[in-house]
Length: 501
Image (cartoon, rainbow, N blue to C red; front, side, top):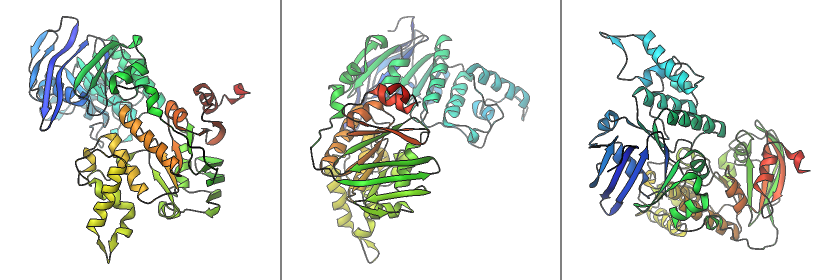
């Protein structure tokens, strides 16, 4: 049983689903006023363990102790009564209502049927002041940024006098400055004695914010370490059983240089005078801080944003895509930054998603050729090693890495000459990243010209033959991928390029 320094002690927790042993005798503890990170690949058991703690699942065996007392959590309301609150990556707020109404929903101060609005707004403002929020209790949630909405969720947790707050991938859709604000709030909560469980795929963030780090793999506990005694390499080794260097397996084939995409002096709403080329069989990385214009550039090449001036050439011929359809017909494909919103139709099957861009070729007299559609989907499921029971599987049920493979598969079925990948491994676990990187390397070696936008420096440095760097809507540098360093790339990206001589 956990001792008195533990806010939470989960011992020998096991949970099985039909055909899957999700957790096997996992023990996990959190101390008072501690940030404890829980990491592992998708399918490692993190979500299952936290769903047991939050009352969504019941364990097959094991025990849970809160503040030294054994408890049973049979439903989510039980977890709330013990001071356990989960804040998910996708916030669960009522957009048309005010911040105050969201925080105190179902618990508003009333006199008879009438809400005491002044008291409600005052209590809410006290919470927001405590968190250093710049928005007001009366503001509508729909007018807030993603980071501010998360702050509302945290304020709601504080209003319930939470002892343990679970943060599930809270930084996935935040900018760097928003992450800094969130981490400042987490440290503040920690200083007030609140215990926090932090789940994230971003290992750099994990090591910067956590006091301890627990790794799960395949439903088993692997390790729990003090964060300042470990590094990313050792965490990855524990997560996947292989070295960090294996994640960026860019095997380069020396081939004759053949220009595929040439971008000449293009300007648009959020980028100015951009020129570069991507050769067949090459991976070119495009790096820049948030707001630098990198996504806008690739969307313009794909016909999704207007190009005011300048020229695009594909295999030596000028093209001017006015829409994504034009770009696709020319031989350009884009796997977008947000695969769940822009890349996939989540409630459709793998088969339907893969065949979608090729549907005209799979249609005869207005009818879809069912056998041809399934054959196409099966071919790319096998080729890209998409892990799912069959191509009839609904896409939403796949892991992040397998969803990304489906997005890439649907474009490969169109045999593109240029494949643009915007944040190809965002929100994907470590093993899934390695698979996507291997796929990218293979595509380049088959002669596809790959243009990759990424916020992750290790990915840019590990996968790129050349690195293009943007700063404030302009392309400021091009460096050789084999010789580039993180310091050099960041110096250009932050506008300190004069320091590089």
